Length: 115
Length: 114
Image 1 (cartoon, rainbow over the protein chains, first blue to last red):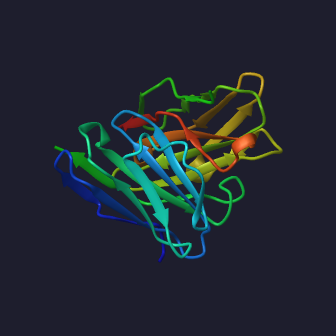
Image 2: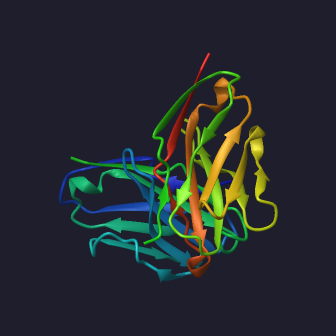
Image 3: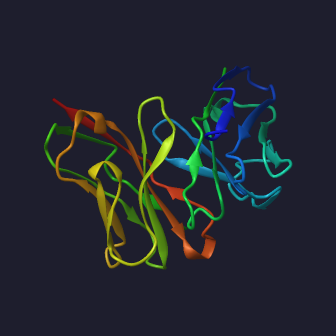
């Protein structure tokens, strides 16, 4: 596609339920990143993929969070047993290679609200 | 720990006035520096980046930033702002020891008034 696509754009879920957030990166981009943006906060790094592997998962806040990437393309971020503090905008970005060599392109995000 | 600080959460300015958005980072170890902009209801887009070379970097929409290694700063400037520059601006830093990961500041909301 023309840009990074994320779905859904908005998600309201009840506390304790599981949610899946999807990211379709730009075709051919090998690197994929997930960030979280909470109200009044900057972007918090969650996880980085190079191809299908995740060399850096250090930003995942707890073991309730997991992510996978298949076929070097689509990625899903799963949050189990959601809590109210998980409410945030979840942003996905992709780049041709390391972000320092090329620009990282961001999707418009998924706004998650846990009630 | 590596961190990026944007001290000003909001900067109000009148149209056609100059503006400076401040960004400081925690370490003087070799870094790559970026400014991203997020317009209302849109995704982030790259304004400019510093990888090496000249410390004054020019970006899109008339913005520029200067890398100051001794002060560990990368302030963003524009000599004359427009209403359309109203947006959230994020400074981001990538340290060479983990160059795949961008660490972002908390953002500065630029509010341009007529």
